[in-house]
Amino acid sequence: MKIFNKVAASLLSLTVMFGAANVEAATEKRIIINSASRLLTYYENNKKVAMYPLGLGKTYTPTPVGYFKILEKVVNPTWTDPSDPEYSISSGPGNPLGYRWMQIRGNYGIHGTNRPDSIGGYVSNGCIRMLEKDVEDLYSRVDVGTPVEITYNRVVVEKIEDGSVVYYIYPDGYGWQSIDVAYVNNWLKPYGVAPFESDANIEEKIQASDGQPTTIGKPYNIEVNGRRVENIQVNGKDFLAKAVIRDNINYLPVVPIAMALRTKLEWREGESTLKTKYGTVTGILKKDQIYCNADDAIVLLNIDGGLQNISDKPEDGKIFKFYTANNPIDKPKPDKPTEIKPEDKIKTDEIKPEDKIKTDEIKSDDKKSDEIKTDDKKSDEIKTDDKKSDEIKSDDKKSDEIKSDDKKSVDKKDKKDKKSKKDKKSKDKKSKDKKSKDKKSVESVKA
Image (cartoon, rainbow, N blue to C red; front, side):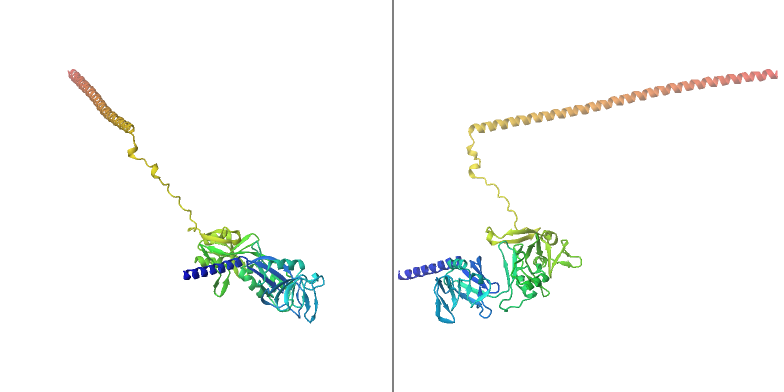
């Protein structure tokens, strides 16, 4: 029983610990201060909640950089002169700390000010000044132990709420950071948008160093046939695997996608065309990266798809999803066959006697009908025989007619022969009479 109690106590202790960790994770807070931009950004659960302008240390008493945390929170603090600890000012309108103090290390802290006009400059002995309304707002949000990170970055790149990547370049207030075009490109590269900002534009922005935002485009990850497309290196050259939407055109990085599909790709720079075994489309060269319009993906790479939500939660963002056109990932599921329930089946023993009698009658009628059909068939056969007999008689009649014609023809020939003989006899008689007459005439002349 004692062992069980110890185990139970241990489990309870772990539950409390993990529960507390979950609560803390659900409300994670942190502060990031950029001395180059003179801005403080407050985050909850890695989401930007608020941003405040600052007044920071002078160039000869700069605000320190590094990782800190809030050690103490005080309302209506007393200010003590760092150079003369004997001299101090209590809370009130003349107090340089204003009405809120959050210590981060030694004499360094985040506080209000009685000089609001100093906000935005390098003016303090190293502390972080805020407008009174801002410091009171921040004070109400943070706790003792909240992490504080102080950096000095002249180049700031961020993705804003609509998914666009924006970058800023700030002046070198402390003279700590010299930057060039390559340095800025390295900051833009992880976001996948570096090819869409020309080096000339970057150089111009460096010269201005005014801290104004420049929007480049909206980058998105790509998935083909259920697998994420990753950055690749070909012949020592890096190719980025981010689709980018800019000026209402969806740009697809063709080299990483073609490699993922194991499809041979040909880039004809002189013609600005891309060719594969599937087809040829217009190619778009952005610095050293090659893109095509997402609408041409079906022609060039035989993939179909587009921009989709990653999940049902809008905060999870979007992704470009494609699948091979002749092998779609999301095939429609076939409809299930209709199930026949037992109660729908007809049971033979449920047939009533009267139904059986009716069934027998129907069968009897069907049999009679078959007999009638048989008789009709025989009748048809008899008719057929009669028809054949009539045809035979007709043929006999025609034969008799032929014989009759033949008899007439013979009789006619006999008559003709008789007449011919008669004519011959008559001719012979005439010829004989003539010869007799001629003979008599010769005898008369002789006499």
